[in-house]
Length: 311
Image 1 (cartoon, helix red, strand yellow):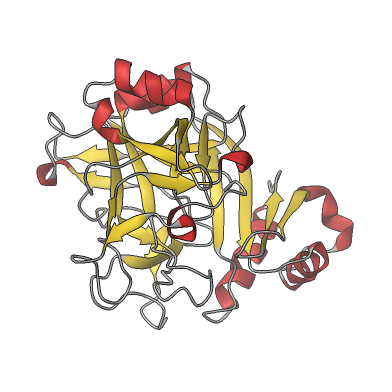
Image 2 (tube, one colour; image 1 turned 135 degrees about the horizontal axis):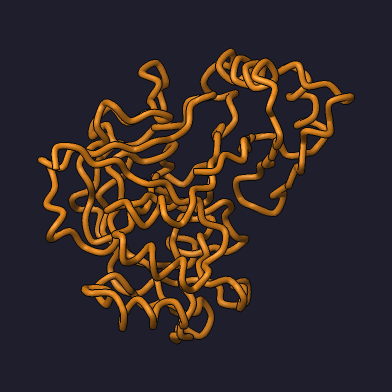
């Protein structure tokens, strides 16, 4: 396993200047700007935020200052996430029965409720909306999809795959056809070859041995009904998921699943995003799906092996 010692901070700031000012509160001065490899703004996103990518934090004190500044902030002020990231070797990934998959960035593509995708809310949580079921095809804006990107995550947290990748999932993965839903253009309402990646099951909650994910019980935005949304990263901890094999059947698991814990917060009334938004969990991929993604060189993924015990 190779550690790149990389930190990505997803902030609520809308300018680079505000990000630099926030870093100053963490004790990272302008003289240390060499450790900041990039600040990418998403000003045209309905969420409006900036990503700060900090590399080469070999100085533990620097990393601790960033973590401390993050943890001092009150709910509502904190960055959207504070991620320590590791690039695992292909051998590490393929030795695991399951891997979580998160994309390094969302693309400037709207989908879902923004364009009229239909949902059944009958079994959804009354507080956070988790459990809603999509009815029919996903509606997205075709013109904003990159032809070079095999896997895209939209602003609305929908996973969209190219025709090449969706075709490979259908033909090469046992049970893969059930994981692909059709995508239609928001203007023509016609299919254009892309597919939506759909989890077929939800994993049980991560085991208590999992690190790097937590929920703030004081935060009023967390779900107090189903307790599935409102989770966030823990500053200074690497996300290392653990699952108890006695709670799942590894021999019959579907190719693609979703974690029980949903990152961040829902906006079911659409007051912030202009349309309902429901928090999503990590995609969890079976080993053969991970192997296919690696073979096809799908870019932009953060893959983490899931440790399974009691096998």
